[in-house]
Image (cartoon, rainbow, N blue to C red):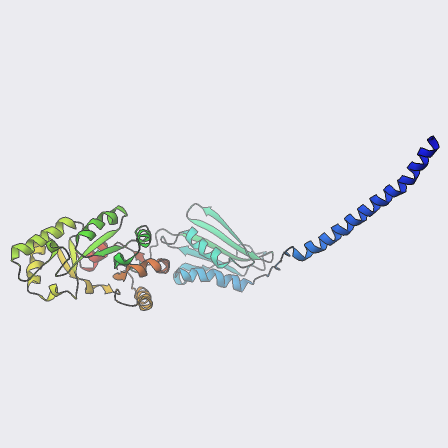
Length: 352
């Protein structure tokens, strides 16, 4: 009986080994197939070889930022290399930054120009808010050096621009809110009516300005001037305007309105003058409000590009163009052109 059990176990052992072997073989085949499938379906990592850029290209990209801020002529100076052992260091500068171009603002432009280039940029502030060093390397070689000196005594005065916006009523609520919260200074051009009088609160709460443009008639009779009205009636219209729009000591007058061509205009002007208020024609400023959007853009940048040192311009623009082009418009500040409040520009231009 015992011998019979031993013989039975001996017969079973080869069968067990056979099963285990087949299982392991099948598992190996499965893993091999899985590995092949993963090779096909796993995205391959694409490596881009580093491309060393030349000293000349680095110099070109740096001076591109210099030119963006119109600083090349009297602000950029070549200096001797402070690192004599670096044979690859071919370009060394000292850049004097005026008060209106902070070092961080200039450095952002440099980093943006090198964004897709194989270059290492090192910037170190040597003296707080006064002196920084920028070094640029590529291919393990230092190829560019520049000192950035902030000179707060230098103030560029390449002109001042101010903006007056019309047709804000055509903006959606979302776009109007965007316009009100932009950091740039401007004034809304308002027509005298109850709705715009109420809107002045929102304008002032958002630290913007408004200028009222007079016409002969208004949707609200209390702001209307008529030639056949007795003088006392027109005086009441003046008093209403001063009560609802007390912010400025001047008003614009629309060039196309019959108010300017009527006999009542001179009487109205004298009454405003008695109360120390001035009337200015809208067309005595740079008015681009009637141009198509593409033409408006061309004219605006032509006006900005022709600015003379110390010149002041007030430009009347459609609100939607100003909102859609705010980033492009703000770039002209790199030229040393300041943006000033519209009321300040009017007072300067009219000698008030």
